[in-house]
Image (tube, rainbow over all chains, first blue to last red; front, side):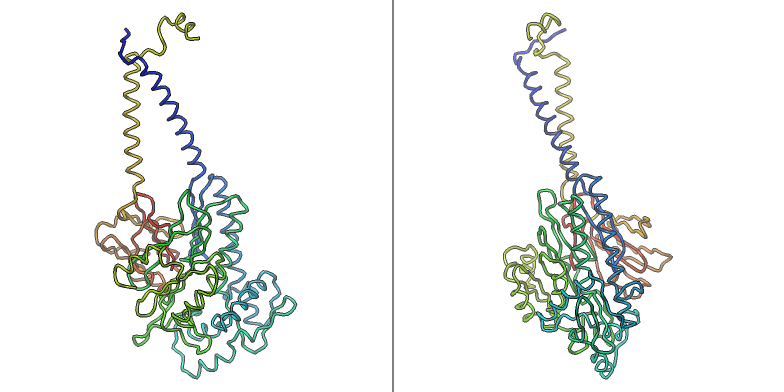
Length: 345
Length: 136
């Protein structure tokens, strides 16, 4: 039985439509392979690290594993509390450090100390120890104890000569926690790239790096509200680090006063006046280190100093909850609009 | 070629038959339903639907966030509070209380981590994440 219709060309039109759909399906399948997302989380560096990567499954799974392995290597090597680390040996036996990788990072850290006039300092380890941030038994020291401790605090008591680090004053100790996570992130990015990954997001306990784009879109990184709930908003980034420091990460409260883990190397006390700092910058090592500067210099002066660094954008939330941000962010961030709407600016 | 086919089959290949009609109708129906399902699935999520709590990659608990409650894990060493579609660590036995200090989370893929207890609390929404990660 055959039915003849007035529109006899219906079938060829349909074949063309099917062909188009088949083509689109093939493109979609190709994109599904190309934009496949995998993630893996591991505990390290006293926090968790999650790497999301986009790409063909076999490629990204291998790359994520290698990148996390590399971060774990760095965690062991640079951790001043790990007896296997040359940094631990330096702090406990005054053994000089000659490891090339550690020396290179210390050189970078000392340059930041110079540029920030000592606001950033890797020799604050004795202070963190005194206040109980290493033993996890918090302690409010007497002012004389702090004065005694400050005798061995100062980046100028370190000497880098012929690729060897030595201390020039008794009791000087280093803590690379202010740069090591940034370095681990930069190394993870290098490993991901060398293994064929062009799109990834690293979340190292709230310190983020966005490699490439997420498909055709930018990565969206939220900014945590330091005292409130959830996020203030988000920034959209590509090939940028979004690094944060806050007085809410490690702290204790004694007699109604908050004592946190970011110290002023001049006074020996935890800083006051700033709740959190978020920096957006291509180099995660520099971004991590410079997040400490507004805490020590104060919000306004700190922001002015950060604005002197080309391409560096900053968001500073002061003790009173006021949000300061660098001029480059004025019209580009979603959270700024939200903050203005809620009268927090 | 066309003439040859006509000779072989005795009918015009391009002529629409009843079978063609049914096939076209079914294909259109499947296409429309598929489009609707995909569209619904990839809508940005309006709110969190669940939270997953892991310890060392092992799923300890999965729970909806629609109802206010207290979730106790690790024999009560850690308590989590669910309220208004958000979750936070209410009490914990870890020394630094960093997980407790992280406050509330509510967006898809947002996490709270307790390193000493090796616990990861992660929001799971039905749709894609509004935010990919949170800096702090």
